[in-house]
Amino acid sequence: MKKKLFIYGSLVMTGLLLSTSCTKDFKQLNTDPTTFSATNFDPNYLLTTAQLDYTGSQDFSFDTWRADLIYCSDMIQGTATSIGYWAGDKYLLNPGYTAAYWQSDNGADGAYSEQVKPIVDMVTTTNGVAKYNNLHQIGRIMKALIFERITDLYGDVPYSQAGQGYYKKILFPVYDKQQAIYTDLIAELQDATSKLNASGDIPTGDAIYHGDIGKWQRFGNSLLLRVAMRLSKIDPSTAKSVVATVVGKTMENNADDAFLLHDAAGGRPTVNRVSQVLQGGPENQYVKWSQTFINLLKGSGDPRLAVISVTNANIGAPGGDSNPADQKGQPNGYDLSGTPGLTLGSAPGFTTLGDYSSPSNSLTKLTSPTFILTYGESELLLADAAERFGIGGNAATHYNNGVTAAITYLSEYDANATVSPAAAATYLAANPYVAGTTGLQMINTQYWELTNTMMDFYESWSNWRRTGYPVLVPVVYPGNATNGTIPRRFPYPLQEANANPTNYTAAHNAVPGGDTMAGRVWWDPAQ
View 1 (tube, rainbow, N blue to C red):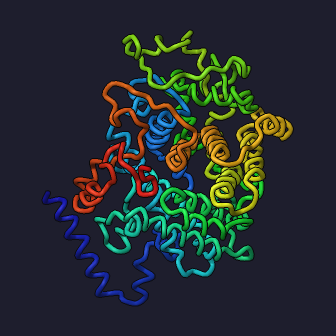
View 2: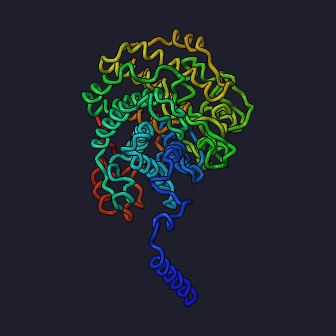
View 3: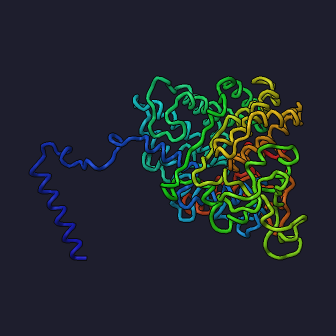
């Protein structure tokens, strides 16, 4: 201790001597040129960080593993899994897993630390800086994208004060009401997209569109379309009015698809997060496409089936049987307990585990892209708006465009996943659009199928909660947390009760239906 104090005292005295003997050019002499500040740091790096981490956290992809896959993919019946810790398949509550998107077990990772913090930093440091106008507006659009998912998963969440610990000394952010969050998301997207300048700066840190401002304008309007349509059940008049402002300004074709390409050479932080999970551990053998999903594709003769699904193969490895006739989805709700009626071996039609269909190698390579928002999604949302509200053109036309895009975009994963426009046309001829309630079911079932193949089960779950399509038969498993109904939200992380107690308690007590998996977010009222 005496040695430490001596060293500290010597450093202090040295500093005092320097400060009294040399005051000329003090700031220049006493500024470390290797340190970063708002004046010498390129904020483009923050954009890259936020974009990469939006595809999944860097702590072995725990948010992707737990939130997107263990919960969303099985709850929404895109996949089925008999592994015991895949709690979403049975609607069981694992508080650490449902909290993972917000904050990981160690509190160092999750959306607030890895996505919100860098994007708030970027938006703040570029605000009013003319040379970074486009970077600033793209940051605002990314911020809206990030918060849309967070609030869709949990409901009321820290928003207006989130990420402001450094700038405004706000250490205990309030939980904004989801209605207020959505109102601001709409305003931010409208304003940021309108201020993008095709003749302005080209952001070098953009890992999605590589600085293409025209694509960002169409992305901003397509995201605005999605945000607006999320309100179709709770506030249809706002949804309709906002959608009307983006008609003709959304994505134009698959070339506008927003995705991030991954790099296996960078190791764990840069690979595709979903593929990383599915290639490891028991997931490699036990994660299967669900019976619901495979049966819908087979029943309609969907040409995607031949390229997205294989039997008797390891996930992420070539090989296996891709014959559409041989594909077989696994039913949800079964385990490996050996208990009659519950164990997978007692499922109707069970033969072997390998006979159940797995995602194909084309979709699950470590270098596979992560899709963020696609032309197919935007066209199907426009089809929904046209059918539901009578705006934005012809529902059948948008539906045909959306389905064609949803079938042909798969080549962006891998050339081996290519499905021709002719095959899509044949499929549409055999499954023509039918207006009315049937049309809404067709549109949103296709949306579910598309987001499943994108491995974006967050979005698949959100749109299902909004529309109720496709009609899914819930799993009834002993000890489930929802009384046998498909979950509607994630409970708040228990860590928040200690970290932000006053604001957590207010939000926890205000959840419609209770702060449980059966509670509801604002835009998803019980009807």
